[in-house]
Image (cartoon, rainbow, N blue to C red; front, side, top):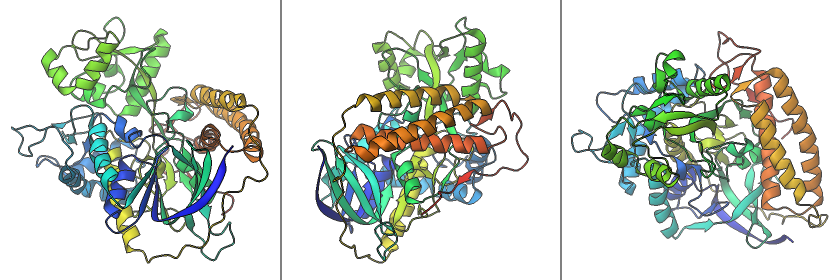
Amino acid sequence: MAHTILSKQYDVLILGSGAAGQSIALRLADSQRVALVTKRAISDSASAWAQGGIAAVLDTSDSVEAHIQDTYIAGGGLCDPTATRFVVEHGKAAIEWLIGRGVPFTREDQSSLGYHLTREGGHSHRRIIHAADATGAAVQATLTEQVSKHPNIDILENHIAVDLILGDKLGLSDQGCLGAYVLDIANDRVETIGARNTVIATGGAGKVYLYTTNPSVATGDGIAMAWRAGCRAANMEFIQFHPTCLYHPQAKSFLISEAVRGEGGLLKLPDGTRFMPAHDARAELAPRDIVARAIDFEMKKHGLDCVYLDISHKPAEWLREHFPNIHARCLELGIDITREGIPVVPAAHYTCGGIVTDLAARTDVPGLYSVGESAYTGLHGANRLASNSLLECLVFGEAAANDILSQPRRTLPRLPDWDESRVTDADEEVVISHNWAELRRFMWDYVGIVRTTKRLQRAQHRIRLLSREINEFYSHFRVSNDLIELRNLVVTADLIVRCALRRKESRGLHSSRDYPDMLPVARPTVLRPHRR
């Protein structure tokens, strides 16, 4: 039975503990009291799973203009020019900040930079700085150590936000976001956390699909909460499917990095035949959407369960040095990447759309910011360029922190406690698990890599039925972690389908059999809530 407790107050409440959330916390904590809320342990985030690296213009042979152009091409002409330039121009400073924090990027003595730069699909230059094949984990570990030691940062592990607290809904003169109601999962109680500024850094929504490379926490929580609070959402139809997720019954969501293809890995059919040159002149170095569709096409054409990514032609010692984690994980499963191809399939990987934000990471609600995968900045367009995601987290994390520090100090009103006087304990938890399984299955079947209007309409019909059922359950029973996540997933699924139905073309990650051509003018899909 969940109970409420007295409210806590902070200068800044950050929901999410990935690279975005932790970098913002560290930039603010010297002068602000910060609460960092995370659903599991502080180390559990999509950032920690990122293998490839961070894209930035660091080498003299590269240029800002080349990185911008590569981002535009991958983004299907839909990238926002101002946001793209802003991120790319601030990329070097973001990397220098991480180096200053002690992130152990892979070094190379022969390089003028002193660090090894790799290349990934869609990039015209080697510009991916990395820490072997576990860059996200290295960044996360470095930041986590410093966040954990900072006296002005309270880390609330095993906590999940239920909903944002809005001044207008409480009838207060302050119309903005005043914090959030947060469920302490371990102690089964809802806390009222007031904050002068709130940052959504909860990541994406990969768990809305049956197969995903995302961790289990990626349930679209921040996107759904912001939508309910009155924020616009944009480009939710563009869900990036990573082309190469390890296909093995014992490998849950293990990603085979883009860098494997960047360093010469070849995609092959079971008989050893390459197929990417028949789909795109860039072959294995084509952007992710093209590679994912090509794999999907070949699997359906030949009735395959998977295809193979083969880099066994490289020296064994070189492979163990450059891809130690991939090599070790595959070897645990009986796959020796120095001798054979890696079985791979596409899987939902990245949410390119999200909550509409400006260059200071501000949303439509005063006092509410969004950074990272939960946000729509305009950078990714119709398809995110490889390794631009951690870069976006860091650049907009700094922008959000700077804007928060520039704001006059708000006085927080007395906030009401969470009201559960009219609800009871749930009697049938099976309803939640059944609805979760049904949602993820029909999203995979109807709103996957290739779509049709009929499939999307079927998905929308199912979402409406599930929404009514889940909202009725939510209104009658006390909240739980699973119920909160399911409620947010169905909202996120609805936004994905609504955006997909509005786009009458095929562009980037949105491929429609009914509208196979690309329209001459690229426009974002922006959804507005009915009310604020």
